Length: 486
Image 1 (cartoon, helix red, strand yellow):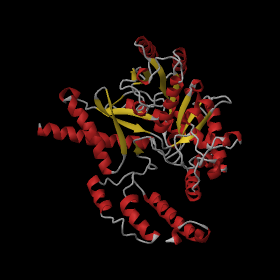
Image 2 (cartoon, helix red, strand yellow):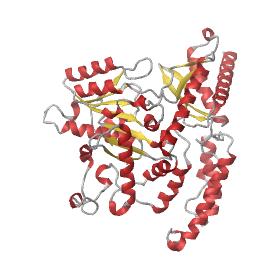
Image 3 (cartoon, one colour):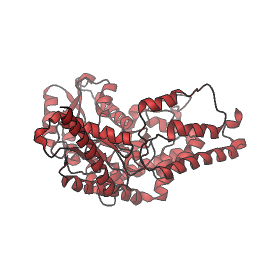
């Protein structure tokens, strides 16, 4: 069994095995002509259930053969231009190379004596991102597993900043968090995990462009105080999951400051604008936030996971600092030894920062930003396509790369509105089952809608037109059959 341990004696075996794995994946990518095979849950479950994990194959080649049946064949391939569903991006090659490097070396980014150069690389990237946001010398942060963890840590810092006040009213039951009605679900989840009251998160209405409505935010803050509660935080979103909308950051910052609330910007999606050569201005005001979530594995074309939490003042990270003699004793502070565990909710942590490092060293920030600009341009073209197509109605013109729309029959007056909702649900499921394309869905105003989330520069307007035709065909078929049965 020791022959399978990666070390100096097995380096050649590692090279052969890794090369075989890469070659198989490369061949699969080259031959993939659709984003999904259309396999069903029951069918694939039977294949996986038949594997006896207590009977090892003993050979990497045999395991790779089996992997084709249980994973590679039926994986959903985000690199395909007709995968236009969720916030999953195709990944750049330098980041995938870095993934192989960091997995093999297996550094843990909790203490200096486990990561050395990795610690400095991560800190350099945090400084780079903080500068792009517009933070001054006090800016700091840490890599995380994703936007949900970043949002959780941000609200933890906000809670602790409020809880440290001498005001006796500032107990957990009185703290409230204000976020738009289309903010990410992790805001509510984080509030629950942090022990806040069941109604702690106040949903703020949005305007017709799905951006937080400033007068409504002001009214909600005033109501919070009038009820004897304390505005703990205001969460602005720079790139909502459903609509890609960017909240009015300067106005939100002004209101949050006037009420003494922490301002957090969830820019998990919109962070790609930090590198955009043409659209950085859409994030104006983000530099006023106390904390910012960024997901490089969305709009920086990085493999999962690659995310970070940035803070305007490094001192606020003290709220997650704990010392253990066996890991990061207090004396290491005086010795100026950089331990990233002092800033993180995690202890053992992958060197995910290496992927972004390699990407920037090969493509540069402008190269990454140009790729993101392409998908934003494509969304604008897609909006024009939908706006001119009387088979569909589109909710809002995109700021980023998301389009929310639904099929509507031309003779809507003779069709039950509930049937139209079912037709849109059916169209999405039927398209997924065909494997020809993958789209997402959501609910707007109590009705079912479809959604394109564009993160692939290879997706063309012709791809979007073909997917729309397929969706319309499935929905029309469903409604036709429904009318016949009726």
